[in-house]
Amino acid sequence: MSFSQESPISAVEMMRFGRPSWLPPFGYGNGLDALFWACIAELPHSAIDGILNELREQDIPGWAAPVKTAAKARRDSTGTCADTAPYRLWVATLRFNDAENVLITVLNNSPKPRQGPTP
Image (cartoon, rainbow, N blue to C red; front, side, top):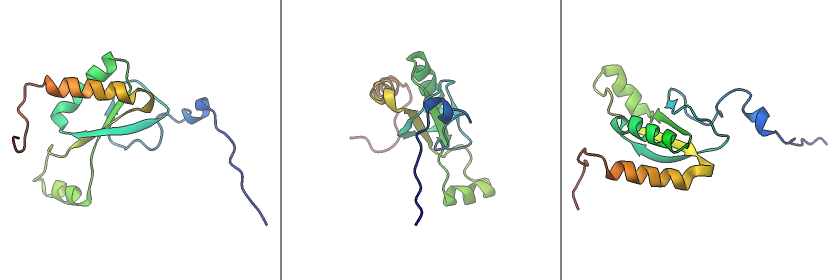
């Protein structure tokens, strides 16, 4: 009989290859790194840059990447769905509550009208 035992990995070892592998590819961040990340929202691409900048000002690591689905990939190949895909926003788990506050503040102060039904 054989068994395996996991050995602990230090934080330095986890960052040896750069960003953690669970962050989605083809995205971009605000230049700050973290060991652990959590998805906080899906937002339109037009809102992402402002939110990432504000997160950086508050010293909160952020990462955004387009949401890719099979249907989106098919539409992309026909050229009918250019820049309309939402982006998933990831933040450092240690600063998740602070990131929520930043997100609420930025979205409430946004001059753009909200899309969708009005309550």
